[in-house]
Length: 339
Ligand code: 5GP
Ligand code: MN
Image (cartoon, rainbow, N blue to C red; front, top):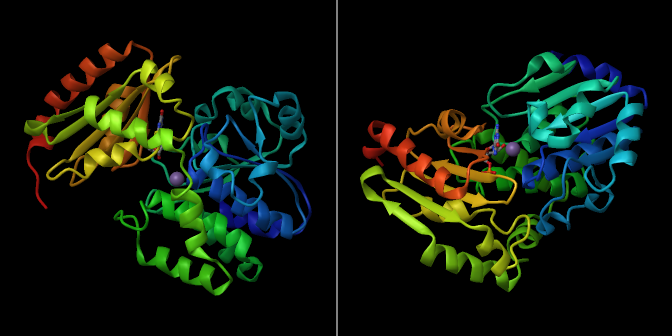
């Protein structure tokens, strides 16, 4: 993988560009891809954003989201665009398997794959150009750097600002995680100077839920949450019947894991959801507990030091047993807690 700066001189010639992200995109995946999309369109490129799967409704307000192709619902159209693309930007993921059914297509693509990502252990061999930096708060911040370092800060407008702000704000837990370095606040300063209305983004993301989501959260907190004080751990395990009863849609479970981490003294919070085809897990931690390693070791997953996820094919009850065994094995790292 060549350094991303080697791509800058090539940006002057109009190209066919595909921009993609991980399956079930979150705020950072959608915000960073759309921020890059608006920027590259301004430079005269012909861009399309493709998501490997559908996404949560709470992202639909983002400028350009209505033009994003869902690979699963329009595979032929998306395949044709990937075939023709000169550049395929891969944002907010670093192993092709995180694009699920798109993986094979991306592997065979003739165009140059370009990585912009902040997760651990990138598959660098498959990218022609790229940047991987686990110290960065978000992929949105990395897209901001890409725009600035390529000499194009003047291209940033309120539209690009809204997309990038949505990405950085959601991936930093509204600027509270340790990844929120001074560079993040500097970036927000630059976006504000260029017309960003940040309150609009907060309202669009956090004040737009339907009643059922809160009924569902109430049910989970009352009936599906276990606290293991000896391990400073909280687990919420959610059945398929729960999802059906409360009409839970993609994205309704986002943020649920954080409730566990808000309990005094809790160091590890986990949510395991029976999604039918697999059991999807989310992990968040505080203090020095590494959930990236934890997710890789027991749950076929990965992510960051303090936020990771994974999936298992076994039934929910077995995954819950596995989780309880895993925290026992990690008692040394979990039982001590220092504020
Ligand atoms: P979330 O819990 O929000 O789904 O994911 C938290 C973090 O873990 C994200 O940065 C995400 O990229 C990563 N992650 C979630 N699920 C998986 C997975 O199945 N495999 C890998 N490698 N990373 C995951
Ligand atoms: Mn991210």
